[in-house]
Image 1 (cartoon, rainbow, N blue to C red):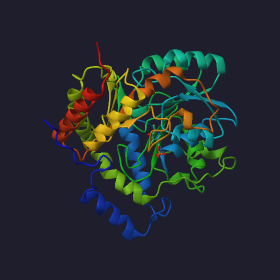
Image 2 (image 1 turned 90 degrees about the vertical axis):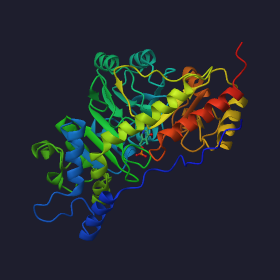
Image 3 (image 1 turned 30 degrees about the horizontal axis):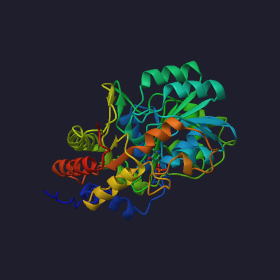
Image 4 (image 1 turned 30 degrees about the vertical axis):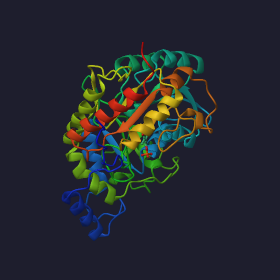
Length: 401
Ligand SMILES: *Cc1c(COP(=O)(O)O)cnc(C)c1O
């Protein structure tokens, strides 16, 4: 029996509700869109967001800024990265990560990933030793958390500075500790496809007052750092206020205003994402030859996307699967393609980074498929999507003896 095609849109986010629209209208009517354009004694929306996010994250300090990529770049600078200095990072991540390292003047050394899509701790250990790198920009790509206890131990043993890319792990946790709270800083994105949607935007969190003071100055504080919502005391700025360049990348009040009501609902959104994730996972589990990444007990994840592998599928087989799913309305991304499509670039297309050999990562990516799960899909629709993938995977899988 032919399957009914799926007709939903994989790029359709939820509409922003009346609370959000009202919050935006209030800012627009005030005319005070710049974060430092406040009335006497008024706390700006950007500052209010910093307070609310610091509280949610359990961090002492928070800076609202222009994007997740910007948060990572100024985190590296504020942490003391020197021009040309090595930064270790995952061999599988999104382009803004090596891009942030490049923009901060660093040199990316890429670390292999495992079949569970997390950084390979053995390769990390090897490269920490061989490079002597001071920095690890850990990317929790597609929301998968490595064993953070082992990672923290490794970082400590090598005296590395850990900065976490939490673009896909906002709200996630390891053994009850929030992702982004394991090292010097956590970097978050509020770009449309992440867990909060302001089109573009970023949040940087830390417990370190000197680091956060530098980050705030770097973000372009015009010496108005005392007006921040979750900033260290004025003393922390004293020595560095005239030495730190202004690299404007602030968040404006309009974005902050539309993020605040979304943040209040984030836990609810996470539950809804996970219901959808589980529905797809359940539908894919019985498919012969299909491997789902392991989700450890200690990990609290946010299922805003799902990944699976079909090891043993040929290049033609993978292309055929993507095409068959597409014909039935299901948009899969395949990370094995030679040329980057949409958001699926691999380290081979980051030509601004020195070419590096990552055979294990390449092997994993050659059979890796990825799919977004927007909250506009119902759980029932997620079951439908899974049945389409199962059907197409069955048709395209190599004959398993
Ligand atoms: C989206 C994303 C970022 C940050 O992206 P911006 O577009 O700069 O906000 C960082 N890392 C990963 C893995 C991402 O997917």
